[in-house]
Image (cartoon, rainbow, N blue to C red):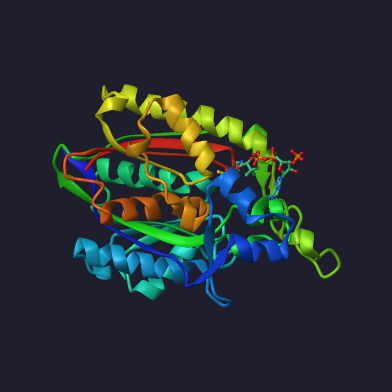
Length: 326
Ligand code: COA
């Protein structure tokens, strides 16, 4: 049977690091509070002039090298991001040019923290339909371009980075076994960036610090995330006939270490089977799952034949889960 297999992974974190201690100078918070409430110790920040497609380029080259694939072989290139280089064209179009993926169609997916899960589901559907055989899927974000460091609600949480996977059609029983997505647009105001789009665009007169502000009802999001992570994970298990005991590694969206811990408990998965790297990355939105997946693979935490579960929850609201036989 034709399955979508991940044959290469890569990631990129910009050089500049902002520690919690650094943040103490910009906003009313402490290193101790951030560690205790989120598990985050530091995050990376893109250099001035760097765009999302520049971060994506490094991760993409890393993943292609890992898969032993040339840019010309890529048939479809998807970038998942809510912080594109510019309003249009898509960051995927810009990346396609920079990478030299001359034979690839390209588009962006905007599904916030569930961007990568949405991208994986899309790539899997194209492969199952027989439309494409070689797909490059990237999650990349420069959240630092969308917030002010003085706003402690968001400055403590988000980070910049990119993660990439190469997905190939193979005749095998391994690969993406199932993908599940959901959304709740009625509750979009729990986490959103209202300004800068078509409804309330920037002008000389209305431009101020608020123009950058991400609005987030953190505790509301927290509760819903824990419940939805567990629900969508169970959906994926039910679709495959597997149980949580069969899962060798759970790679969740790195929203907050406490959300991951509470969701893991609700799902009934042992803490040692959960990948957590938020300490050094912060929450990198659509980039978090592919970065964590790459780091887990590099650390030898995934072996051939393992069942790996991925899951996300975030702005939209959106959520998703997938089970992959590695
Ligand atoms: N630094 C210091 N103190 C802070 C603070 C900060 N950055 N933010 C809030 N506080 C204070 C509050 O004022 C409150 O003080 P009080 O008890 O004296 O009233 C206390 O800390 C608790 O605030 P609360 O908002 O209930 O904290 P929390 O434990 O819910 O943590 C988040 C806040 C944002 C870290 C947490 O809600 C969260 O991670 N939510 C999900 C966010 C998320 O995942 N977003 C991305 C989408 S996936």
